Image (cartoon, rainbow, N blue to C red):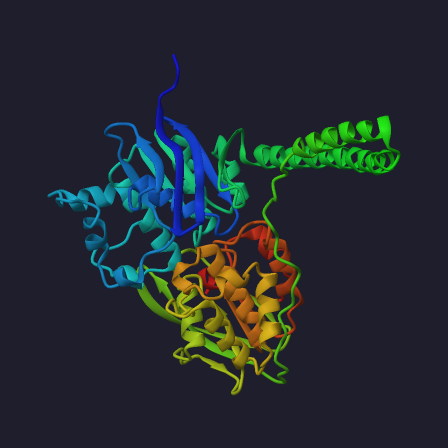
Length: 485
């Protein structure tokens, strides 16, 4: 008996701008109970596919079929800023058309599934990034959906949170589709890949664990390139013969005509090789020349049992100091960085005149109403630069091309916002680099390039990251372990 297909895209075409399709006659099916990765380049349209599944947007052409009665739950990438003032209970209540009388009981059960316990009267905006990530997942689970859509669910989660999520997903009996750039996480439970090609705008279906599928795609590309290389050699040889015989006249000219037709057929048989995800180019982050104590920290505020506690410490950061801040979700890592950058932490002082380059995990440093061009120009000017051509070249290194320059930042994908943030850091030339989960939303292909640039940065560096493989590429020489204070 054939397995039931719970979700199907039938020749779906969708575009935000006229004649610039995100999907072009895309077709694929997802069987009941499948656990799949939705894979594709930053900005390819993965989140758009989720929006189509949820019915938030409609195809221009084609149809999205959901098996009758199937419910959909979505864990989004981030809590919307306009929801920050809602309490946890109010945030969950928004899921229901009619709020059930046993809402608190349902919340408790959903929170247990994500290994999280917090008073429901706490405001969502007061939670750490990792705590918000767990809330987003719990909101998706509270309805026990038939189709669970997860958009970058490991962002901001500590290793304990990721391990618990993997265990939950392995045991979840229903359909799961995940967007993530965490290769190890994906390989732990997914059994196939939906590959969205940013160039053809099609979706291809592959079966197998994540690493096997990535290798299969790479092998296919290599086979296609080799086949094309052979055909191109044959085509060149034929064209040389065509030119030679065409000038001989008589029967030789007829032979030339026949060879020309065969050459045209060979050109038509060339395989259209997939233009695989581009990787950003190697880059460096220039450092502002500073001498002395760039950052002095004498006290930090951490959270224990949901209450703030002040701890005395003695940390001094100079040029080439690279400090890693660690601790479980909710202990106050991101709050500490925000207070440091905003200079509201009474126990920390930044040297006067220091340019601070801050990569915020929620992109709070970006003005979403700015165009990409305007945002880059602000960083160029802050870094005392004035060369617009240089600015465009830096942006292009991060795959931010001319067509994106006039877009508002709010229209970018989360991955594109991340790459834009790195481009801004390069243009700013900071003396202090503050990075809060800089791997969030970033395609794993880019991570080695980013790690090299951070490792070569000569200013003072403060880093928070829950990705061990990324951290080990950076020569950290100072540690602040908040859970050991």
